[in-house]
Image (cartoon, rainbow, N blue to C red; front, side, top):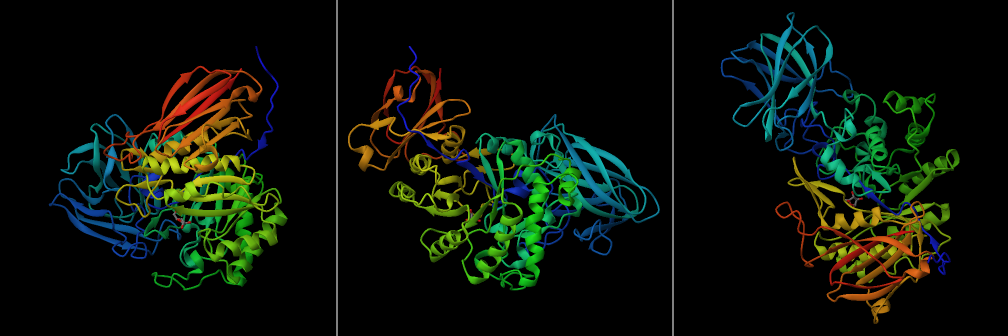
Length: 632
Ligand code: AHR
């Protein structure tokens, strides 16, 4: 018999609670999610990126020993002024195989037998004769894995594209491009993509890594940083306009995390990726100041300026407004037409915009933040602005940031914390007493220090409390998201990867359970724990939500303690007798960790169960259980 009356008083919670934060650090973009396999494709690396880097980093001159010639890096007549460096190769004697360049990719180029790769290059033939060119992927002994040939002709820069089909697997291949006759040629934008990118976009994302991110089912994605957004010094502020349009016309930039941003993964690709994974885009722009109001004076090329000069702020504010037009404007608008030209006439439905990241709340910041905030608020009251309250809840910037947010009535503020796992257990009540009339909260970055099961469970306990406070905590994203093994600038991360494999952490599986099983209503008092754990023991967190879209009820029980926990869920209170239910559990040794050598140490396990009207449960020590109930 169906009981259709609910005795619960549901609380409306944010439908966007659990999302992701993508920052280009630890090779997250170039050498990571961005599927480009050639490192330093446009010869723009420099010592400003990294002391030991230069235009020919990752490149080698190639000859069979019989051929010879010269290579030089030049800037006089580039493909585009935003992309000034290119190589000039002058082949004086071609030998038997030709003379040219070899690229070693990011820790080698991984290729798979039976797969195709799209090679492209910009060439400017400077000598009179057409130039036959051979391009191949080779192993470390020079054995050819796949190749193609073409002829470059005519003065002026032209793009050539070739398909290379691969016959042998190799994780550590090289790309070799050889000119097979005497002559002189300019070379730039040497590129190689797998033909199978995520959702088959030409300038696309690495399919396996993108899929693991998509599988998180995030409600939103914040990008492109973090510290990367505001940079260290005004010259290093991330300028979104430099990252759109044809890739050869984008402006590369030093990455604050000591490497290089090709900007191949730019704002168009970020928006498109958000759409592909059904996540709302949450771009963050600098508030007109650089990291912690630093001038980055120790950096090559730094001007020492901490904030954009006031007489340049009007233009900067316009850049911010233009981003909204780029995302949402009609195809007839100036910036909407650029989105359409990139292949996306429909708007990207931008709803949230972050301004600032962990900034020092000084007068320098406040003046600039106010200018941006007022202009966006006035021109686009529909956009939900996310302000910033410094790097940690313990510093003075936190209080100053909140004070400013209250004065300006900023819709949402961005809190960050990286803490010991125990902190998350001790602070489960953090948002209970937040004033519901003030700004709402986006926890833009948080993580406990570690990737062990215990860390993930402490985060899970905390997240059940975020759900309970989902009326004031509107959004939350673990940070950082992805990191390339061997190039990590920050640990821990949610997902590790190398050139060929992706390793989700236990923390990942916890995040996935929350995002995939989020709700739009919080249902209090469904779960009662036995004993005094409910009131005293914050090693346990429980929540019950309803997803209005599907009608499903989701129970979560996180136990970061060393005892099993029992309780009862009064499902009768839900208002309809449950049909089928799926129980997913993550559990194991508290020290267990998913690593490259043992990637599956802790995985979620799902099983269908049948339910009574009251569900009595006992969950093991160190476990996280999610019960998703289809209500019939
Ligand atoms: O997530 C790594 C860094 O931590 C972010 O760039 C910054 O915002 C924070 O300090």
